[in-house]
Image 1 (cartoon, rainbow, N blue to C red):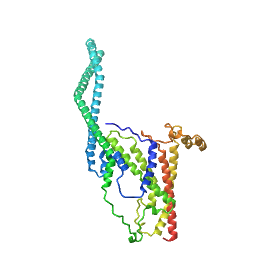
Image 2 (tube, rainbow, N blue to C red):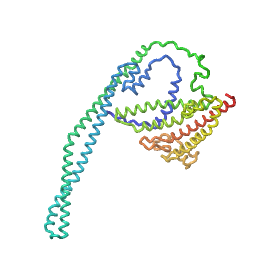
Image 3 (cartoon, rainbow, N blue to C red):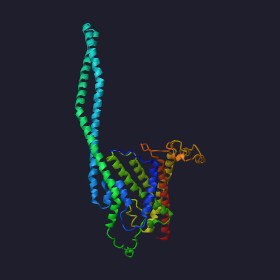
Image 4 (cartoon, helix red, strand yellow):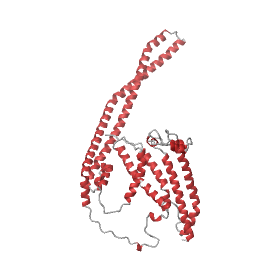
Length: 434
């Protein structure tokens, strides 16, 4: 079975987090026309989920069921191959232990056997009851004990090597068999995918031809809605540019969840199909979700989608709720201000970690002035692999951590701005007596 050695480049990670949401937001704003199957989307599903026939299911073709047993066979074969590899590894370890024991005990046995006649002769020639006789007796006893133990260990090691022979062969044969099953099953799925890649445009045309005519759209009559139950979306909550910024930030990071689906799907396929677990997928995603949580804070505050206990708050009229919000905003700004200041310190410390010869790190540590940093700035600061700006992670992926720290600053700033917008709304509500 081929192995996957792909490691997500750092630049691609950041470009994906920025570009993917922008493209998704643009596509989400397109006019909605009649529902049709798409050839580009079909190929995207074929590439990402074709191993389990998702492209066929997308086009309402039950022939996608052919892929599932083959895919399950790959998973079973890889599991059996891993079990056989574990058995083979254990057997090989036992062989190494037995061989090292033979290497150690055989010379010790030969040395002890060679020393026995000399010790016996010394004992026979020693005077009865003398110190020499007692010393020779002790040495003779220790030597005989060494011979006995060495012979027992050698016999045990030789027995282990004898019994291991068939186990090693069986484990190796089983591993090779299941690896072959997995490999040929993968080749079979790959051949089916290549055939479907050629047939996909025709399948899409046939699927679109089978779509029934859509009934005429009906207009939603909002005149029957009860007072205070207007049909509106989040955009109706935006009264100023701060609110619009919070809405944009919330929608932007919401699409990161889609990236997580692709990343974890790749991790599962790489781990269980190709036996090549990644060293970057988990870290990339939990860092991404941490940044998502921070940036979406202002959106949650605007839309009031955070969790709170409002047993007493909810029944209050708008003006009294505004008074409550205004009085409790003190505690909010203590939290948001602390988050902003602390995250700024964390971000500057992250950049100030010495790494390569980055002028940014030198500036953050106060070793050079801002003017000197700008004067020494060049393209190599972006392209030289030996230059990293500040703090990086400790695992093999070594992703820079300072951007995440600056996202903390951005999240804190957005939260403070949204707090200012909320205070303004509360003051207007009180002044107008709403």
